[in-house]
Length: 101
Figure 1: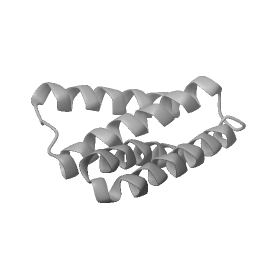
Figure 2 (figure 1 turned 180 degrees about the vertical axis):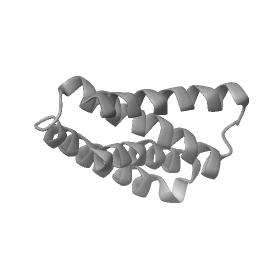
Figure 3 (figure 1 turned 90 degrees about the horizontal axis):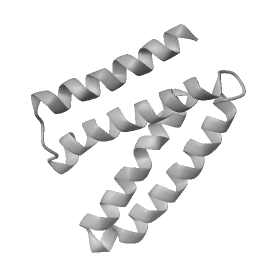
């Protein structure tokens, strides 16, 4: 399940790479497509073991929080108290769902 979430982070990063650098446009798009496919396949496998709602929430939560962090680290996305508190709520919800499984 975690691997599916990690690949969920990869596709928005690939799309951003494609937007920011014309020379890396095709590489970014390829990364995005590959990450989408791997993420979807791994989510499919995870749903065989855990409930669909839990799998989807964990998958999207990892993707959202991870993309938020990568955006700050690599693309200068804004950091603010409300943004950080909001992503912490997402993370706590994902952890709660996983623990309740």
